[in-house]
Length: 326
Image (cartoon, rainbow, N blue to C red):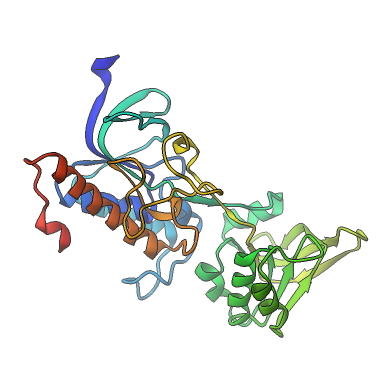
């Protein structure tokens, strides 16, 4: 029913560091933002036990605690944070239309997309068990590698990102065992040669994971098998890293926004703007390079500032708030 349509000045799709930062800036600019948290309130950081590389937390903080604090900060400035997720959009006209849970329709002056990207995992029951326990399974070496200093770890993957993460871990860990499913890398030669020439990285080709081993609380090893000979053996390890890629959560936007070949939203360089006026993007929905909480927060700020300037250009009565920049 038309009478049930809600009109908002700024809708933020997704939470996490990008969405909550956008909400903080938008709220302080009197844009009255409405934020829908999505299917995973707080985003990927809610699966991270310890965050030690975000400025302002000298003793570190857990991912869930950080997201709670960011949400409280956004709500302090009267951002309207809601449960639910956006299931459909229509950006074809002057009014940006979105639907919540396939039911509620909202018309938006501006939209900030902060839907992030989901790490791909192998899907093994044992892998998911220790991922949920926070006991040694990770998809981000930069985030979690520090916790495995001078220990032995295993990493799965064969692309440039896997090689980069393996090399990063080699500077922290006593030994890194790299599992490559095929008989060669998918990575560029320069990246492949880098890991091949690193003394404490052992590469096992034609090798796949059968099970992540543990004591019920933390990872203690990995059972692997050679997919050519079916020979099996166990590798002692305290950490199991998965580097087989990420999938951006952008499927509902593909009919309206420019996406790259892997589904990341393409922004105008140096801005948070998309190809649709009034629609902006922040965080890992567009970032396939850095994928860090601090960079996501930075682009959340950019998206809110760009949205504020867009509103000012369309409505002379809407003034850019100088407090936004303080």
